[in-house]
Image 1 (cartoon, rainbow, N blue to C red):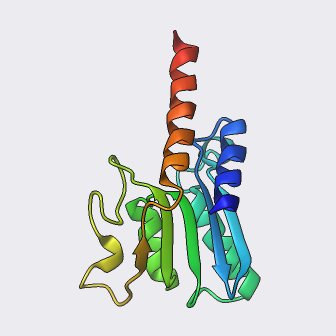
Image 2 (image 1 turned 90 degrees about the vertical axis):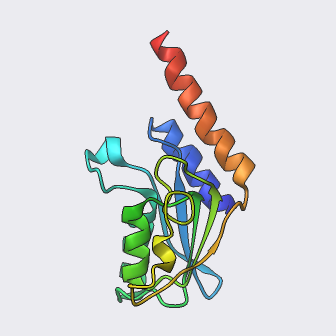
Length: 146
């Protein structure tokens, strides 16, 4: 999670919402990402999707079985759906997302009975630090408007 937090800080330094993600397999990092929606002008350039894409390229397979994705913010429906499709085994996230989180807050897409894969979820890891990064980022943005 420390590496995901470092990536989130990199995102904030670029003016992106500070979210970082890391995919781990057999104790090794095989994919990383941080939000790049503004830089890439791409609504799908979320940290999780970028990390998943990099991990899949690294192992040369779209199935990320046995992988854990660490992310600083509870994943949205799009990212949770991508994790289900990629067969990610586990997701560890920092703080909840009351406006978009789909691993427990607004829904439980990771555990939907109609889907063919379920993801184990560990919420709240480094949650305070993750939340403070986000609060500080948005506080700074608001101060620029004053």
